[in-house]
Image (tube, rainbow, N blue to C red; front, top):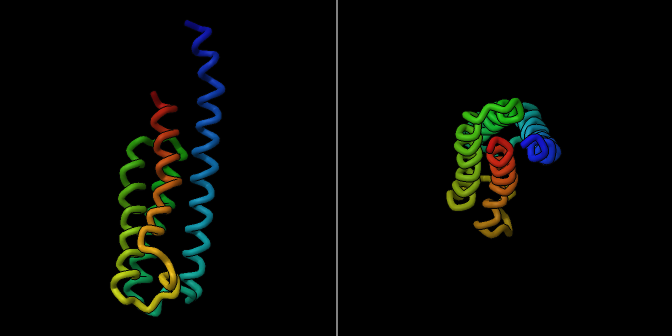
Length: 129
């Protein structure tokens, strides 16, 4: 029994590292986007769109901090806020909002935003099991 516990410990350490690395990258990315937003360099000239993006990015950062802290309950807010951010990107794409990032992009490209959260969730749940 003790032998299986000792073999599981390095894997848990690696999974925790993956969570920390990916969550850290996402927190840094969304923090820089928020700084740009507060400097008046938002993605859109539509103030409502920028405000919604700002709130969602802040929610993503807070939920990821709780995920890094090991709070399983933070996975749901993480997914809701990231899903909301992806939804706003679809809104910008099909809603004719004044944004540049939609030019030449396929609508399905916004789904890339779910890659890191999927890995974080899998690592978190596998580590907890």
